[in-house]
Length: 407
Length: 197
Image 1 (cartoon, each protein chain N blue to C red):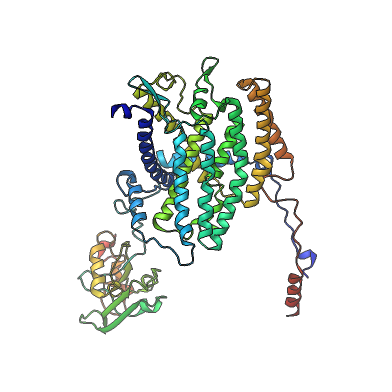
Image 2: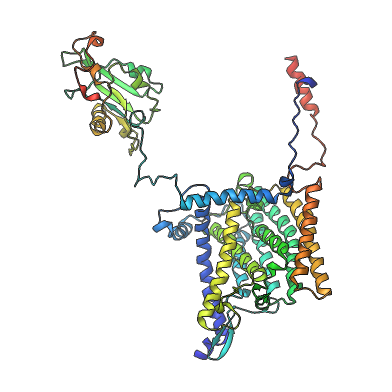
């Protein structure tokens, strides 16, 4: 028994159990903090009645979701209607399997990975699972048999397809720089130092790719300003209009689970995962149990930082118009990330892919070029499209004026 | 066709450089929301935690539930002149007058009902009352289980006076000290019921 528990297999099973439960709790508390942060930003108090500071609010919400009547409308495609929230919930929660939570742990003289699974293609696995979440949205919108829900689903599809390209290119930049697809390996290769104290995190090599990946992560997890799929004002909630009770709750939780996955992913790719410079417990050599706990804490802190910024952005920015959304992806982010990709390939060719001077100057060049193009171009990301014909008064309007004059 | 001279053409304002770049404007907006977040966390709050704390109301002119004032002898001050029910835009005051049992006035209200659900709390009744017998109080948390419960009769309105007299004393009590009908204005203002000040 002890032999099993200290093997990689036993640790993985235990970790999977712990992580899935921790995440369910974390998503519930994400909703609480979302409400709190929105309240603070709008000069309100937020939930403060259930328990001290309202911290039991997620439990009350959970009970509410369970007790409410679960309505399945007559006109829906029943199997798909039930399947959709299950899909989105499932894919939102299996992505965590490949996240390296805390390096390695020494158990009975053996080293085990604090990672549910450590496949060679960990990065591709997370990417693939992450893109599958759009299936839940599309199936939900389609099964609802409601034109607004379908609009939401179609918007979600177009948005996901568009933003997956810059996202993939940003990740390719990391892969080219690091030379591996294993997430644990990517973390390990970021634990060195430049000039003795600057950690070799990828964010210091490719800051533009980091920001772009963060923007696309917002779009991929359907967060404001990219939440066109569930625009309350024009689509009445979009793909989840017809859902109620726990099925709606699953869509709701999945969104937050997706945010956490995206945050963990970005933290591992660009911020060195569990690595924190200057702290001996978060170095790869530390394999004691308390070091592992410290590493998990550091990664969680990075995730929480990203979550806070995502919520902060949500309560600051208005939603994009659809043409602006497409402009931003196809005319803004894709050219920039293509340039970054070219830069990373070039650096790899001259074997300077880990040199901060080369990478940073390349990033700066791309940023300046992008800003110059954006500020001088007539076809800009924001504002009105200037290349459309001006709207002239139609014949009907003219006739109406005549009628008015005749009266 | 609208004549060209009547048409005012408005050009869309040109975007400035930072607006075109978009990101500086985002940073600006996020600074604003962060300031609000910090203020709500560490500085003043606007919210009043209602059942535990209550706002200080302006007692003299807050328009809440009505009350029927008592005069200094504890009788209902109303003289059943119907001025309030005439002035009422919501028609929520129902008075039945009867001959006064007291020698200093002719009529008094045998019934005096106010439908608090119809009332719009405009305060016109208080303005109209010649003897300042009807007043609005700062009491705002009136609840009831049925519509009938929300129709306050004379006794209930007098009870509201008893509850609120301490926090909001009756204004101008001198005008209801009736020495005789018709010569009210000749009364010395502070001779009777000097409790107003």
